[in-house]
Length: 339
Image (cartoon, rainbow, N blue to C red; front, top):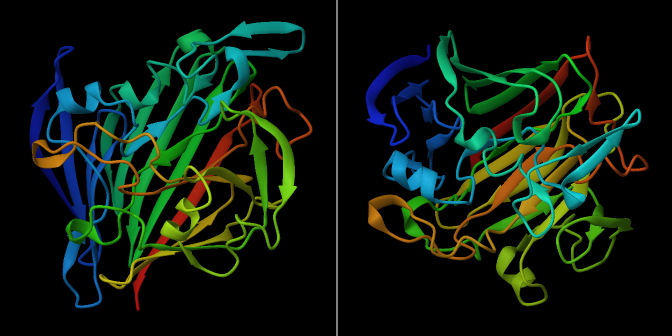
């Protein structure tokens, strides 16, 4: 049985209040905010059975609205980057909000991470809903969105649906920053990452894809688990999109993240064509818990999504354009175990 408990709301400095709820199935527990659909806390057991929070978060609504790291939020309408903040479909050209270099990142400056969502109770979790109007950050169509967070035994399910009355590219992701050591560690370097895929996107200096790399036996081949610290020696940090050859849209295993001190392990399954692995390269200075500033490489994001700039690069996997009468569907399962 999942227990649902409202927490004291926060005042929204923009007006109104931000709802906070906690759900707990006895194995896992979540704290969810109506602001941005944010997962503020995710408690999972370590190898000794002691539960601890494994995601980064903030102390207040003000801090969440100040930070630019999308901590724990739903990113959208389009997660990752759209080149030059522009796209074309059926002869219509659209200009989007630019908020990263010359690109539109995670839906623009006022993306889904800053919206006030409606939040309600499910038998095994919570349901968040949002209406994004035509022209929101430049995106076409009135878009209705639903996001479910459900706890089933030792699994967190994240399921997203959306529909629009004009053709629009849609790609949402859950943007939690995971540190499986919880409060025991200040960084992600001792975490081990294993990825089933060997294909990833090579990108330019602003994160726009140039080509698909078959990375078997390369520095970014994680078929055998490697520490994140070992990758930092050879790169400026992970920020790469790995490809999932998932033609049937079924849940496929992506890989797992593990932490040696706590003994926690998280395995991701998803129906999305790509998963961005981001090592918190630009986290430095953002507000965190207990009035502490967050640090570079303090955690890692594992973000199932459509591919970056796919609205413009039709040769990439998947078709992100959702037309009237179609339904966008994203489902991911995060399985938590110990070793």
